[in-house]
Length: 464
Image (cartoon, rainbow, N blue to C red; front, side, top):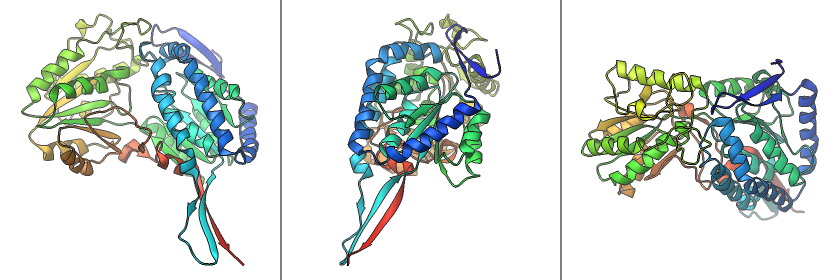
């Protein structure tokens, strides 16, 4: 394969699903130039017209959700029974919400009345936004930034993971169908080295990245050479705590889904669970029983509920976490032989549940990003909070309890970006999506999501 091209290998069967060329220097330069030129006019376009363009693009993708879902299954392995709903569900919900609140989010902020003066703060577009999107939720993750960035008057250049390049192309098709002006939205297939070069270009005004901590560090290092900021969503090791007053059956049903959906390849998926000792045995038994009902196999089949992981080395890494825990005394509860499609040396990995775990083990400390979860017994709220905070990640945490006031009290003690009660693994577009510690920096979604994509400009007007 020529070095200026890349292949997307389907985890379904290891075949080459598609091949694309990396952009050359001329193409990159043209994209940056087009974005810079287009932004000057786009920011002057009325918000109403910007909203119409975004609404049209969203409609285009939603109408093609089934076809796009099949493409997505081939690219990253999520079962086809779920992939169309990334578009019909979360993507559409987030896009529409950010469109609906645009006028409020971008409205002038008046200062208190002062005789002889008119004073207000206006939100001004930054310029060109570079969006670096991952493969695990390729439409959901980048819509958080793309739609509000465009509505705020910015232009956008999207670079997608090499595992899911068609997603970037479908975005471009949607905005072209919406007749958005040339240069306002573009995508580039570029290498890591080219990404660094683009970030260094003065025509890029903000970088939004979703991916690994290592990748985020590289992005931040590149950005530090310039006076621009970043939004970094870097994943997590998200905990769940089942309190003494929890509805255990409800907790089991939802935490299992939160741990194993998308083969556990979710930044806010549940990777570690702490259960009050009075519920521990019942919880573990119910959790394992439900986990065994998953069907691992070809994700193109309608009855498959657990598809392959994105690549073999991801499954190998997860198995390493399991083996290391077992060597230190952990117990595994699921025999992989119950899942005929499970095979070492392939992306097909059976779900696994571990007990007798502790925080000396990788399975409870490092992001496994697989259908694997560790469960510990705790004596009270204090021990649960201490263990939940004992992590260098802090994206989401969930509490399972009937006591909402106590949940809020505990949430105030948690070092996390989002605190859930009786649910998990979900982004509400009305709430800020953010993380602490190694889970990143910045904020997307909600009315606050517009702030990082705009700069304040003060108008201090004296009346004569």
